[in-house]
Image (cartoon, rainbow, N blue to C red; front, side, top):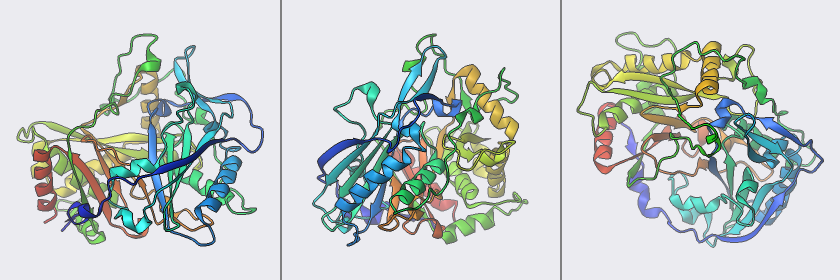
Length: 454
């Protein structure tokens, strides 16, 4: 049970897509927008780094890439009116010691590129090929560092008429849920006379800290950051500021039957959690394997903490609008000794993960936000599970069709394990687990991954 994806696909991967950049320009809001500064919540503040995604489209004779380019440029100009902050620039306000977005309509980036490869020649799209980085433009060399766009689209056409839409955006602009809504709104504006899918809610004051801040829970999932006064602007998030190591990486595929097996196993004995989800059982399984594969894995008294994101929109009182555009996710956590992870029943591990998410009540979320106001810290654990599994980017309907596949551009990190869908998206209930570890730890992880599925 559980299959190793990498072994069958590695020989098909092209390592250099030979992408040629043809044009780059800035796209501005199609109407005048108000000049103002946008408040960024304490969750947004710690996410000042870029996220890259690639959305692959098959050839459509009615929409060759040059037509798609013009439609996307027009659609971008339209959505930059309700998403005015996206055309702005990030700035540090020394008076309040916080990052803000200056809504100055300076524009988003648009890059046109081409490769002589056909879409079918570049290999399995599910395989996280490092060469996909060439499908995303990360910056504009012609602009100064403080004038870089928060959002850049690169359309790379393939010889077959298919194309890839690569997007790089500062994480402070969107979380995964609000990014999908943005894509739906962008797609809607590429159609003639179609309304927005939903009006975005840009009021990030909804997640402002209370005054005065009240930290009412201990927050072991957060790490205090000691920054000398006046140096807040240059401080980098330590949890994300990690050099790439010499790591092996492998993809472990869990089929829908594997996930169903884990759900059944989570029922006990002893009695498991009342609500058993696919995410919780996969997280529990991966947590156990990762903790016990550590190079200190023989120390069974060692505690292991797994972090995973929880959407707080519906957990707050009153709830946030579902169209809230900022980052509305916080890190839940589960902690256990390696001895418990090795010997405890699987149902108990799933219960620990379930309780971690259930802990995220309105008061707990507000306490975590207030903690950030007091300590200016970051999420902290042994590793983070980042799930793209059910975000549904490939469900977005453009005039030229839905993406064949959508995926993040992967940078291999031993402290981040990625969950992402197979081709077929959320309709296929299976999941791919991307793990990057030193060779010795990877060997142990792989053994445990299959052992605990038996």
